[in-house]
Image (cartoon, rainbow, N blue to C red; front, side):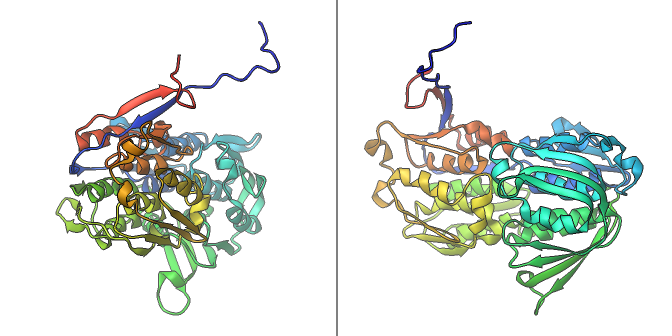
Length: 478
């Protein structure tokens, strides 16, 4: 084989991009796929339960697939029905025993979790409580995402050892455990609520009451309440302690008890995914009904529809779901710590408002699939607008006269990078509903939580997207 010369440049790889075509008001209805957050929580509870569980409405995506594949490696039987939208799970009992640990008694069980934050955090807690030897690794970005607070919470209460091996206490995570000792735990609440959720779900697996103290302010409180509902549905119990009045913002401690038992559980449509369709109505002056969700949904992100109401949209509660009717948009000042997965969606909507929008309380967004503050600002500035970064969020200034004229000012279009972040891609898709010439790189990254997103958006708008493949810099692929 002939080797390339030392000074030969590497051959660039073709890249896939998608262009959403602008049009009139978006009108219609949509039912998003099942919630990722509920699906992966239900999988943990069902996997370590005694008996059989039937999970209906589950999400089929990369994040749930890596969870299923990992659980299968410790002997959990998970049978898909209806293309994976229902899962029948045979639990492994949930009680720590020598028999339960035999599968990982000699060599560590390797689990690849891609860039799924829920999977690595929930499994780290669950497997350490269950007992055995494990190594959890993922993509390059996953090995940059902190998990030290969770590891530090588990280590003092572990009969064995646990370590995060990358710089900054990031994955891979290595575990050698004989289970939890029952010693109380302390975990920080300001980076990710998934740390607390993971510890809570591991409590019934440990086979003894677990007391968890929360240090500092807890972000994304609705997800913790969701976790408590899952634990109750599968037979466990939670007991809460608050500082001062009975307010979730003053949550200081939770004790988890009981054990998991198989049950039937229905997974709601994904409220984070719903935000894109509500936003489509908002920025185009249309009307979109998202089916299967109401104000009492367990997912906090359902409140994104109320944020759009604050901006001037009409909020209509239907028997079958929540409908948003777009209207003239105004800038707002909003705390989004409890619905931080919808910040990118709101940022796009805010570009079309009549004044600036200030987003607060989402400092932890810098530690998700990508830096969802810094990288979001970088990309939105490509439109020529002003985006201000803050320690706890950002301010989005409207495009003003740029709106609707992007193709004239930028005849070659603007390519938005997605940083392998599904929410970047889906949020930037909304720009194409109003602005011509918007291209989105690596659209396939939506497979992480919503593989059918592009098809569903086409169905809602009635317009086909334009797919292109080319080389960096705009050259055509050979």
